Structures are given as structure tokens and as C-alpha cells.
Figure 1 (spheres, rainbow, N blue to C red):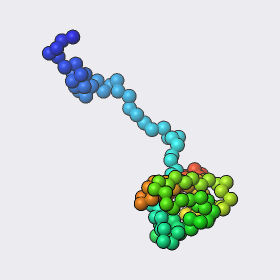
Figure 2: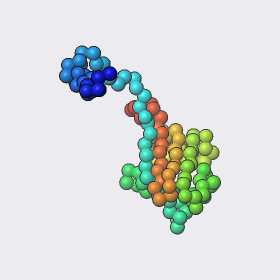
Figure 3: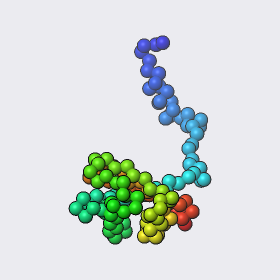
Figure 4: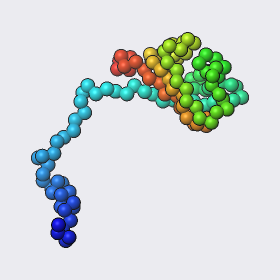
Length: 128
């Protein structure tokens, strides 16, 4: 190998100078799946004993002693709570009506001072 020649620089230069005929162009497929996840900020109010969610200018307060939140430990530093359609409290049905979207599941996660709520909407509704 020739110590005086920089082969990597030469290859890069040749690539940018004119060997573009051999370069394949990337095009995203038209049937690529879209991610239907949305994220909202959630505040934990220990004084009021609820999770406060701001959505479209409205404030929704959910008591942490209700439904799927009964097992919620408000003293825990990190939160990781998932709620699916089979939840008996029908929280997702209520949220679907409030958000005017069919919600499949929600995930509340993060440190208590920076909680997030991610929710997944049905693809058929999200595409409409």
C-alpha cells in the first residue's frame, strides 16, 4: 500500500465528482406505514390527586384513585403506565370521545416532573 496516497479521500472525491450514474436514488414507498402516535404533556397534581392533561385548550383532570390509575403510585419517581382497550373502566372510550379520535391505547411515562402521555389512534380514523 502506498503511504503517500489517501485512498479514502480519492474515493469520496470520485463519488462526488461524476460517478453519480451508479448511485441509486432512495424513494420512500407509497404504502409505507404511518406512525399514528401522538404525545401530550401530563402534570401530576399531588394536591388535587389527579393527572392534568391539556388538549386543544381544554384541561382534563383524571383522579389517580379512579379506574386504571388505582394502582398508580404518586410517590414513585418514574412512571410507566399502559392502558389498552380491554380496560374495564372504559377510559379509552371516554378519551376517544373527548379527542374526537378512536384511541387504541395510551402510555403514560417519564419522570414525575416531565410526564408524557402517548396515545395511538386507529389507522382508519387517522388517515381520514
